[in-house]
Length: 380
Ligand SMILES: Cc1ncc(COP(=O)(O)O)c(C=O)c1O
Image (cartoon, rainbow, N blue to C red; front, side, top):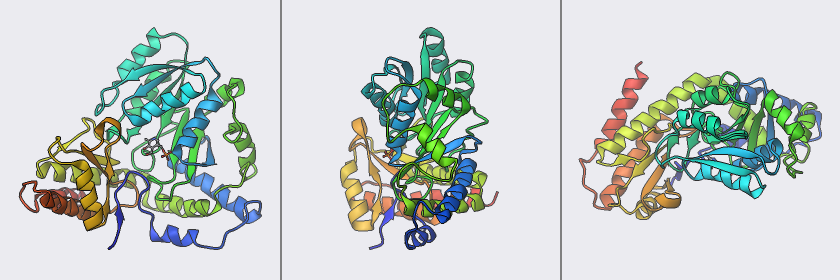
């Protein structure tokens, strides 16, 4: 059976990237690698829409998050953490692990943070050194308004640190224009690569903070990564094959164009949401991200059973609910290497699996709804 990944990481990897990564390995202390790494860094700056350094670490996205914390802060510093889901909570957990004091801003799951509440916290809580926020909260399917948050935080000395691990390469994100100090991304998401690389952009303001930060760090040292980067190198052995794949992925992103990519994700998100509604089910997120659709199973359908059928019977991998949403939702990703017909396939499999579970709806209604949206948006 053909297996298809509709999980919000890892995502499907294009055949041309897989082929490039299968080439014989090159040595990382060679002119060939330096040339590759320079090319990749140009591509990363385009993807992040920045003139800042974008540092590459061999790790999953969480490594990039930890790197941001340990390079910007000192023990006892106070930070504001937006916690509207599991990944916002992770920012807080990392900070606490290093003795950074967390001022939480808790947001009801399924809702985006109201940027005014950030403004109020910054006004009323003295001494906040940094604001940590998640662009696309993958556990709740919510999109936060990073542009507006950027405007607010820039009126304040605090740094703005954004987890765009499932945002970048799918949702609009303009690092320099929106004045985002640190942005974290990962390879196995919109970048269409296997897991294993984390990327962190660092603004001038953030580099100033690095100078005075005293948290312990070795592998995650931004300054060492920057010095090596200026020579087209990494401090330690990089994941060479993934970087070869990254060169191809960034070429593909440039060829398609960011605007087109954002539009494609928008179209796929709209089509999936409409399909879900046509099947009589709800969307969990009130301000939904275009990265994934979280289907609220209203406690009437067992999420684990549904996922099991989708995977075993139809070869469709979707993710389950995290934390308090376990068993109550399924998460269907449409991030990265996804085309219109992938969406129709996922919706069709969802219909078949729901029928297997005895859910009643008009057969074909989901596929028809998705097709209508896809056709409307294609003809524009
Ligand atoms: C928004 C967000 N932040 C952070 C992470 C953690 O990334 P990783 O699992 O690559 O460490 C994920 C992973 O799904 C994510 O979706």
